[in-house]
Amino acid sequence: MPKKPSIFPKVFRFIIIITVVALLSFVLISYGVPKPLIFVLIIVSYIGFSAFWPAHIIYKSKSIKAIGRYINNNHKRPIFGYSYALANGTDQDVEVALKRIMNTYREEDMHDIYGAHLAILKNDSQAVLRHADNIKSDDHRDYFKAYAYILKGKFMDSIEFSEKVETPWMIHSLKAADAKKRGDMSAFKIEANRSIESALGIQRFVLFHTMRRMGNDTPQ
Image (cartoon, rainbow, N blue to C red):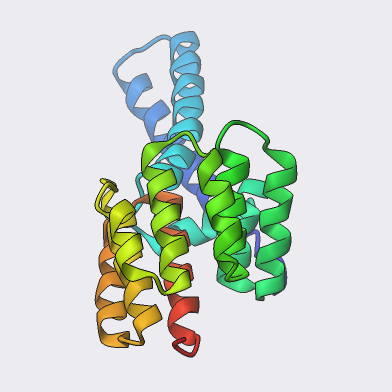
């Protein structure tokens, strides 16, 4: 794993916040707004920005670089450690990160969703199916079952489940995995890009680096 990220992005963001606060204060004072009210407005604005920006990055951002910076700054948290390992680590690092999530978050579905990802990493189709059976979310359950049959090379069996999947990035991810398994790297690249473009936030980042790693592997 590479060296820990620079603190420059945090410092730069802090400078931006201070600049905005100073400008906002100047404007409000020029309009005769009472100083106590200005103070309250600034605090509320700062809290709002602090909550909004991470939520935007995690769920809505399309910028791989911006998401990557956020992940680099939060990679010690298990849920972001997986994304960080995908971008920067080895398969062993990814495995460790996935196991850490499974041991930390035991909420319904989370344990088995990340367990299924771990099984895919190990190319263990039976383990993928076992985890899929425990997943309550229909889309995730069908996605992982379809993926398991792709790993087995049972493409017709995978269609039974892939046809039920409704989430766009999942649909294209399955098509990319299918193309990769068949050795059709041209189709793989097309579907991999479509999968990435269909996702936002952390999911987009995860897909970007998952597909990059898959593309660097020798087709099976």
